[in-house]
Length: 160
Image 1 (cartoon, one colour):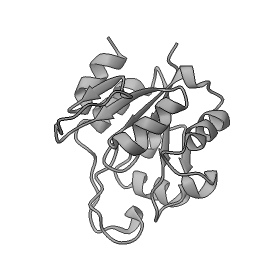
Image 2: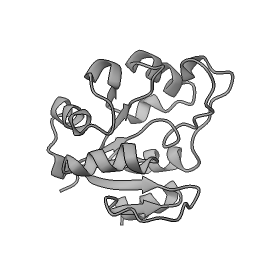
Image 3: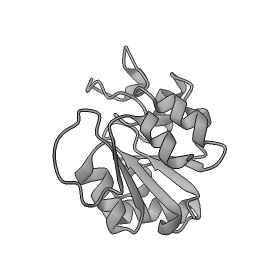
Image 4: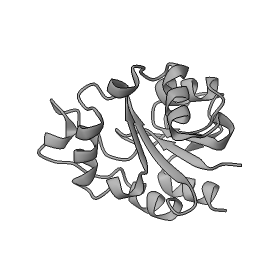
């Protein structure tokens, strides 16, 4: 049974404008369209976790950035490569997130926007996966259990 949702941060929950330095200090920040509605809908049924390989942000910086759009309230656990010692797509990254959170891979789904980083490593670690493909990039995504063009579609999958 699915119990936990592990979200990528940049371009999955918050828009990555590719500005220098940590997102918490950027002049502008924004939700990815549909992210707030998705989190509002699922946070009562699932444990929502956020996990990033962002170069410029550790967990305190990520929390500061999330707070700028009032997103931190939806997550019960926060992880970054700086604290974990592993980066995506290394399956050890996903294993560490799940071990520290107390979930088995079969109980968790990784939701991310980068097939090679978010989906392949999570699937190799035994997790279910959902690829956010906002741009509608044509391709074969065999490791993705779900491919959605927007996060509204994911609400229908997670809360049928």
